[in-house]
Length: 547
Length: 83
Image 1 (cartoon, rainbow over the protein chains, first blue to last red):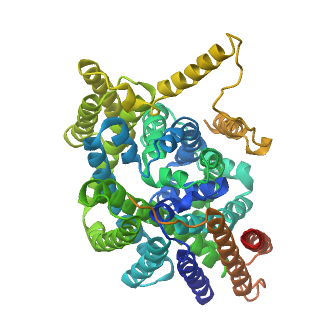
Image 2: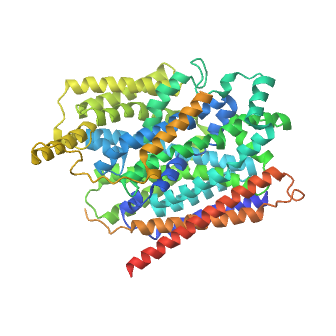
Image 3: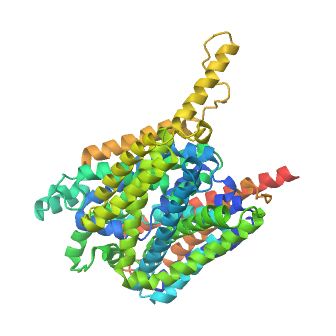
């Protein structure tokens, strides 16, 4: 155990030192909030994947759910996650880039006006602060339970490390660390699945023991179970979770989008997002598949697990040798830190770009907002730290987080789709639709007592979509110059207009190449379409075998 | 709004690559040195787990070397251009 502690200590010290070293290069708000728009596609891939894996969404919670419910938990990794990345990369990211924004609320303001920007930014800000507090709490509890570290000093050390490199280095430091964390999680924690499958006689042995000897339902090995499944009914996973929550998460979560806006080009941004589908798919082998074998190992060794969330920790604690255990704990700590740094950096961007610079202190030099960004990061760390003890005691906080997410994703998805794909959507329509969808989500959850999260998201999405369409049709059409360049239709019209003009210049001769676009084909291994098609084929194969 | 002169994006990537490389190398070597491979000293280190551990550590270290070298080459190119 002392060797494992030394490994974790070395890892945290290295991250702390690298954060300070990197921060010397950060000089402006574009450097701080968008990493000087420098990130190549593989940085984006690692960062997008790592920022999405934390204690909440990853090893402990998802691993625990897989331990309890089986392969249905892999629907995030083998179905909706990669699907969401591909759709966002192909259809949404280009509009964010074209709008020249720092934040998703900034895009909403360009399309719909400032009211929706304020509502959306405040909602995400509260959600982010609660998320950081919850991640710190889970991190502290995990290290306390697994290696007996004292809770509060551990939380303070984790806050100090992640806070320092994110506060000083901004998005560039966060992306850099997320890539390190991506490697440690992907390479360092991958051996567990091989070790466990080796112990139970391979995947064939695993299914034989669980299905034939233990008589567990075949639904345990289904990614999309039937409609009566209590945890993940297949049709609702497809409708509510995949088409609303996941795409809304990929296209509307500031942490995810901000990493893409920090890319060195739009192409790198799109490619990074699409290729992230590959590690997402492999993620199931890190914390879902091992947990299917965990009940057998626990039964063989007489280990009692009181809570599903604790299963992953107990498994590695009882199985792995010294040294390897330290690397695993470093990997799990990485998951928490990458998630915190992503959210922390995004929160400060929202505070400065969507609230402070937009409504409070306008027209100051860039350096002023750069310094303010660091203060905002510091303030959010302190606020989250203060919230840690409340998160531990009050179920109200977690209720607020879930409600906020339902409000943020369903109605947001409705107005985002309409913003891009229907030119006629206007400011009053979107505002009425968004507020009605949010009110419905709260009513459905709190008054009607609906607990299945993706049903809330789906119906709040439908309500917001219908109300926005009706309200937009009943009010004035938006001015063409207001939506120019922000919608799919205007993009299409611009291209057609350019072709028509070119045809006129060429006396009606057919033009095959757009005049204002230089088309340079990427090499085959960096082709977006090949990657998207390849990843979709992998998903289809997995769904064919485990659907 | 007056703009600060920002950082060189190529330099940012070079620094990131070098730092990632150094972190991975140190971590890989530290894990290797601190995990006794002999089952007599480290009882859970069965032959299969030992193989997995060696492959995993070696991959982390080699990736570290690749990133560190890549970062240093980029630094060198930037310095050459400045001259």
